[in-house]
Image (cartoon, rainbow, N blue to C red; front, side, top):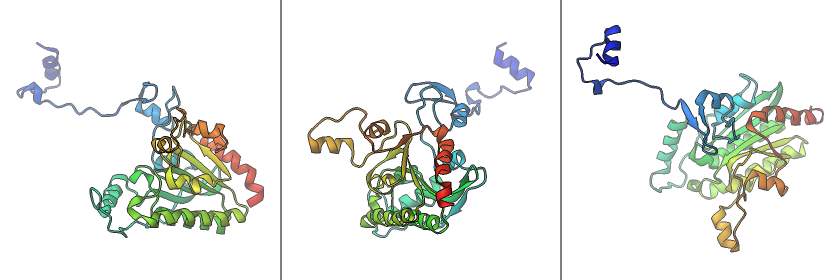
Length: 289
């Protein structure tokens, strides 16, 4: 008698059917391998560590909803303008209709567009925050992203709140043409008024932060923070090399390279970000309180 037959007998399982037809419902994705150091870990360990590899500190991609849980006080997030959704102003078609692409993204991510905005607190300090989500069309900045961020900034200015924007974007959304490029000036104008009110603005650059987002609000923060080894750029590496006819350093367009050359102020691990933001906010409390 085989071991399988013995176990089946013990549990009163009939083996009349072919053994090959027996299915075992095993959970998937129990183990995850770090793509940086190949460390194999149980998925709950990775999730408990904010999706940061415990061995090499590689930062796995994460969603805007997860970032809300990582950074803000429990149940403090109050969503703003969640009803805003992009339309197809140009009737744009590539491999599929832009309107169909938008619908697919909404179903896949559960988001209305590539940014979530809201009011929350960090250790009881109220802040206004926008969190971009790369899962939604590469975090591209279209009209709705620009409108939601602008409304957020205006609300932060009116209620005298510090502002935080977490960037994760491939740049302006090409399917909306000039309308997406207009958002760069629109958001920057609102940020100017926020600055004139002597209110702090922090940007957090995650991987990737590129294109028109880098060229506008991502680099306008009073303090610019980046996650370790994040890709931060305007144009692509190949485009730059072909333009200047030179080879670029291997670590070019990483947060470490930009920090060394003075483009960003801090590199902060995701596991320490909440604590670091609270420290920075405490420096400003007397000035905006």
